[in-house]
Length: 404
Image (cartoon, rainbow, N blue to C red; front, side, top):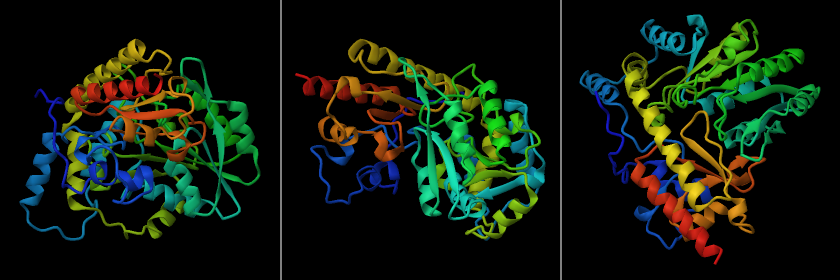
């Protein structure tokens, strides 16, 4: 089947965060916040879900489940789901895990909140490399623990690498208990190499830290690239927890389901015991995720090619019209992490600037990401190319007007 990623779908009036929740999420404001643009006039390049239709195979499977006409309490009881998921991991990452290690959560964010609660006492600390996903900080705040930040190194081309000396210094803190790892990395899009991951693993093992590896972007790599799970690098380390989901890959985050792979038996039992949803899952989510792993590999391969071309468009556009912008093509994700500070010095709140001056909604800076993010914006490119073209032109024109 040839899938159509150019289709523009109207998401208004669906209670979508993307269309209806941007005031609260980006601007911490309510409906009273006004802009020179109507809501429907915005180009939305912000929150990390897609403007592409979820694969038809998944939609058909959900429709078939709906035809059963009963949606009672549900969870995963048969081995079918595990078999589908572990085959996906073997085929794509040459990695697997025992069935008993597989747990579930309504999402990786709820899992992070719950795991930090289990693993850390209030006088202990978690660690993240920065810039980092905002919810890593929120996880620490929710559990009243401190988040230590280890800034990534950035070269002149905008390529991020790990400062291993700094990371080890954070891990050596006697209060440090947990490393919240992101692999592939959001927002930079780095796929950590096996050599980098081995160095991280050696530090973690040296100080006997827990490590939660958030691998939700693992399927969304540039064509020809390959993700390496931390579980493959640390095959016997008992304090590793891996978080994955089909939700990001196949645009079904609202179905609220993720795979949490916990090696340590006591921690696994504690995680299940403390589950705020008592182990129940949405019956439609189960069939959707299993179908994704069983039937949607070809959709993903076509998506990756389309995303590659979207990134090429952004790279070429910036080189031609905004050459001072610093942007390195990411190795994974559908998110472009761009340093626009050289193009617009003096503008601290870029989210507000582009919303008001360009009619483009985007995320960026230290207010929405954690540290080491000043001057950066994150552009969601998981949308039809025509929308990206419009968004880029608006961004360019607003910067030109600023610099007159």
